[in-house]
Amino acid sequence: RFANNMGAAGDLSFRIALLAGGCAGTTVDVALFPIDTIKTRCQAKEGFFAAGGFKGIYRGLTAAAAGSAPVAALFFSTYETVKPRIKSQIGDRPVAVQACAASAGEIMSSLVSVPTEVVKQRMQAGHFGSLREAACSIITNEGPMGFYIGYRTMLLREIPFALMQFPLWEHMKQEVGDWQGQPTSPWQGAVCGSLAGSLSAAVTNPLDMVKTRQMLGQSSGGFTTTMSQVCGEEGAPALFRGVGPRTFWMGLGGFVFFGAYEKSTSLFRGSGVWG
Image 1 (cartoon, rainbow, N blue to C red):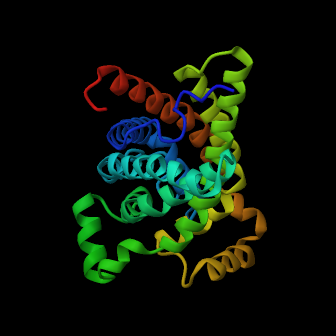
Image 2 (cartoon, helix red, strand yellow; image 1 turned 30 degrees about the vertical axis):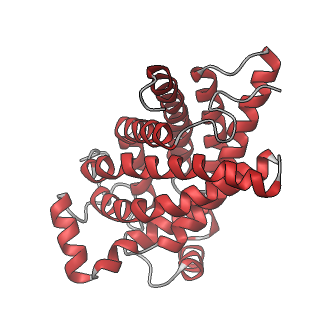
Image 3 (cartoon, helix red, strand yellow; image 1 turned 90 degrees about the horizontal axis):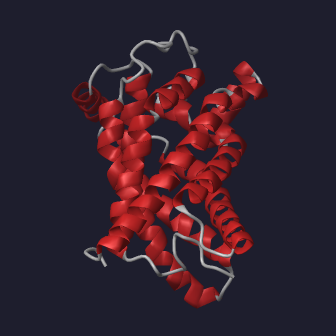
């Protein structure tokens, strides 16, 4: 069986994973930002139009752009570093190795992504007009930990998402590679990433909904309390608010993200500079 184009476990150096992840993260976050804004406004308690509708669709882009590269770079560098170590402990069990590595990547990247997400979503919902205003208000009124509101819920969303998305992505790439008798191309890896992202996004939307409410300051408690509030006040179907934009965003984003990641990996490898 052929190793997927991302490389067999341990094939990618730390520097290549860091650079390729950063390029991919920035590409997708900036290109698809309006869809993310629509999703956030759909999930806001006040409703889509009251949260801004289609106006100021790029509000919060500065926060997203500032965090996208370090978040993606931190995830992929952790992912590629942890994979061979886990494999050496539990043997050649691809799904388990990829799932554990992806979970480790999410835990590390969330240290940066949560503060970015808090600021970005509050700007998207119209709470603040600028990155500076948002950051100053949060630190003044809520203290440094205000940037980490929803951290646990973010992990509750990201880890199940990663447990689904990455094993699916790598398995589909391996199957395609075996079928055609050669490693997958970047565009094939991108299609596999799109399918994996869409399915994972739809399944984990309730977790994303709870996370959004917490980060917007529209919840008085933790994960369980927030979910109960949403179900009690708006009904269980409200947990799937924004599922359309989120699924579309993650599907298209998966194509762009994994395509950019694999192309960047190929270019960095080919240059011979980054090792």
